[in-house]
Structures are given as C-alpha cells and as structure tokens.
Length: 466
Image (tube, rainbow, N blue to C red; front, top):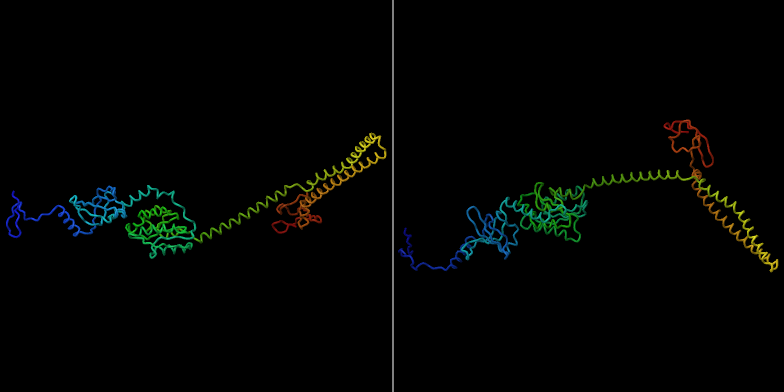
C-alpha cells in the first residue's frame, strides 16, 4: 500500500520524498520546544494518583517515583529542598494529591512533574498514614504507659494550649471556676490549618521552657473531621507532648475522636470540659473530707488520752505501799545504830590493849611520858571515832528524811489532805465505782481528819446512794 503523498502548502504540488523544502530541527531544539510548550500550557497543576515505585530519597536527597491511575503513569521528582519540607510521609501505594510543575526531561524524551507539595488524598489515605505513623511512634516507645506521669492533685497554675476565641477556653474556665478556681495561662494557637501543628508544638515547648512552668498543661480543641484534627496527629506535636516535663492532658475533639497526641499525653480527656474536671478536685468535697479527717483526729486523740489515763491508774495501783518501802530502811538503820555503841567499845578495848603492850615495851622512857603519849593517841582515836559516828548519823538522817518525803508523796493521806475521801466497805476494802455499792450496805468514808460510817439508803438508778 502506497504512502499518502505530501503537498507543498504554497503550490499544491506533490512533494516527493527526500525533497529539502521541510524545516530542519536539531534534537535539542525539538526537546526544548516541547519543554517550553508543556511548561507554558500547564504551569502549576494538582495531580491525583497513587504512588508507584517509591524507594525513598536518593543519595543526593532527591526522590524519584511515579504517580499512576487506572490508565496512565506520570514520572515525578521531588528535589531535596522540597522533600525535607513535606509533612506527609510517602509510601508505596498511597493515594495522594501532588502540586507542582509539568515539564520534560530531554535526556529521556519523557515528561514529568516536579512536585513542590504532596498530601494524602481522602480519608482512607489519611487513615493509612495515621496507622503507619502510630505504629512507628509506638515502636519508639513514645506511647509506653510507663512514661506517663501522675497528674498533680491541686495545680497552682494551669497552662492551656488552644484557640483564644473558641468556645473551648470558655468551657474550661467555667468548669474550673465551678470546681476549684485556679490560675490559668492561655497560650494562643491555631488549632487547624498548615501552621497549627508547629504552633501547638511550640506552645508545649514554650510552657516547659518557662522559668516557672505551670504545674499542668491542657492541649484542647473542639470536635471536627479527621482533616480538621489532623494537626494533632502530626509527628512534631506528638514528640513535643511526649518530651514535656510538665504533666499533660490532651482534650481533642469529642469523646469518639482519637488523635496521636492522646497516646503520648499523660492523660486523655474525652472532652475539654472533662479535662478541666480531671485537672482539679471539687473544693466542697475537699472541705468535707478535711472536716471528716479533723473529727477522726480529735476522736483518736481522745481515745489515746483515755487509754493512757487508764494505764497510769493501773500502774499506780501496782506500786508498793510507802510503809513497805520504808520498812527495810528503818530496819537497817536500827541495826546500824545498835551496832555502833558496841563497835566503839570494842575499838576502845583494842586500842587500850595495844596501848598497854606499847607501854610495856617503852620501859626506858619515863612512865609519865608514855602515859602522855598514850593519852594523846587515845584522844586522837576518840576524836576520829566521834567524827565517824557523827558523819554516819548525818548520812542516815539524810536518807531517812528523803525516804520520809517519798513516803509522804506516795501516801494516800496526802491526797486526802487536798479534799478527797476514800469509801470502804465493811471489811475495809476500798470501793472504786458506784456500781459496787448495794442499797443498805454499810460503808466507811475516810477524810484527812477522820472516818465516818454511813449506809447506802437508795438504788443508784434513783439518785444519791447516801
């Protein structure tokens, strides 16, 4: 089959093959012309598709892969500078929306998109990205329950990271004032949008860097869709919450909403109002508990004093009587006094014999001189004996006086002298309680100045017993 003939546009004559009247282009000219046509025609575009052939960043820092759908595939490049600024974590098979410039690569005679920004497309892609990020951060230990710190019982200063214009901060302040008013410091941030994650992370870090940081941090936001709450799933926010030295409560969305910051926080509150309830106790409950503890303390103190009073009385009854304490001392004093005169006589006799023997041996000395010497020695011995007797009697007199004072302090008569009395039964045994007295029983009452016999004339339940 013959090829279709080509015609000259000016003469209409058939142009034979190989005629040199067509304009010639170099390969580079054609490539650059196509490149300019693509860039001028499309410029910046948004392309939706599935990532294919992704192997991570090249050693140069650039990333090369493809974006495809059911009918076509588009080569894609992300330069190193743009790759480092991406918020989304790329992975094989993830459906994304890429924003960039369409251009060509002359070296391969192919066209491609230079991506400047890329984000997951649709809830399914976001959920897949969220699950992958959750597993990765959990593997690092950021969600480990052992890392979570207890919340302070009654914080003095509470830091709140939220939007200052929303209903969330009003709900938190209202609940705090109802339960237990505390000082609150608000760090205003955006809770939605591209800059929200960075602002929230900076607020958490800022509270921790304060010279006097708050005792508790609450990160709060109202409810919304997965896309609305996505800032609290960002890695920078999760890491800031996990690294916070101040205990942190996350209160993002409604009860059914869950974000990654909830796993890294020390406590997850289902709502911002619930976060305020967890942050402080109810002041009225604390006052009631304090009153109860005070009453228990007073009752315990009273019981302890009563028990010690009973033990003291029991110990006093177990003490020996003063007469028994003094009896042995008196007996020893009497024996010592009886032996004293005999001892002095015996001592004089012994010394007299020694004097007589000495006198016999001093025959060369005059008798008068020997007698004078013996008298002096005898007088000296007698003086020493008299002083020893005086000192011994003085010591025994002092001991007797001390024991007499002890006897007077322990004797029950000293208690009677202060206005008290002892009630005894007919056998002389003391009665310690009214329950031991029977109607008509003969009794004896002893005062300091004497004793009186009485009879109990009525039942104790009807009034007086006498």
